[in-house]
Every structure is written in C-alpha cells, then in structure tokens.
Image (tube, rainbow, N blue to C red; front, side, top):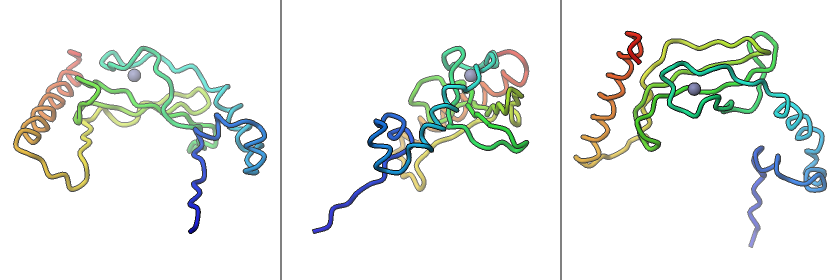
Amino acid sequence: MSEVTRFPTIPQMLEMSDDELRSLDMYDDIHELRAEIAARPTPPACPPWCTKEPGHSYDTFPSHGENGGTEWTRWHSAKPSPAAKAYVSQMEVNENGVVRLLDEPKVSVWLEEGADLTADDAYKAGAELVNAAIKLREIQQGAA
Ligand SMILES: [Zn+2]
C-alpha cells in the first residue's frame, strides 16, 4: 500500500515552522515570500461602489509585474450577498505603488462548469444576473 503525500500549499507553508520548511528545502523561498508579504503596500481607497470592507487587502501573493516590479492584485466587488453567483467586479493591480484599475467594472458570473440547474436555481441565477446588470448600469451612470 502506498502512502499518498501531498505537497503543502504556499499558505500552509507560510504557517510552518522553520524546521518544517528546512525539511522541505523551502526555508529561503518561504522566508523571502514572508518578507514580501510583510512589506506589501497599503491599498488605496476602493471605488465608491465596492461593498467589501474598506481597505480590504490584496487577494494574491506577490508576482512579477509587467513593468518588472512586484505586483499585488485585488478585486473590488459589489455583491448583494456573500453567496451571490453574479455581481459587479473590477481588478486592481498595484505594481511598486503604481495603482491601476484594469478595464471597466464588469458583471462576473460564477456557475459550476456544466451546471445542471433546477428551475428554482435557474430563476435565482437569472435574477442575480439581471440585478448585477442593473448595478453595473448604476455604476456606469455614476449613481452608485
Ligand atoms: Zn474594494
């Protein structure tokens, strides 16, 4: 019988002890990542329509930006409820303090690939889509 071992994820490695990291030969990499995370920039104010907590943090680990700097990414969103499958969102990138909102706000939809919906689920998803479209129009017209 073989034992299945799973390599820890980066978030798990960030919580590991130095000895555990050395055993994985990840000590230097994770300490470098911890230093980058500790030095992450303070995000600017959200667009007025964003319903996340004010000053919400970056959603991703640092990566290499298109201009050669360290890039942090977060998504602003206007979600009517935490479980909403359709809502307005917009991506923000901070590369070495230069903050860019990418594209315009858009309606994001998250359904399972190949989802088979009951009639009730389909009505609910349709209503969420329409409500997200209404919210996006309000944002575009400066009313949100
Ligand atoms: Zn936001």
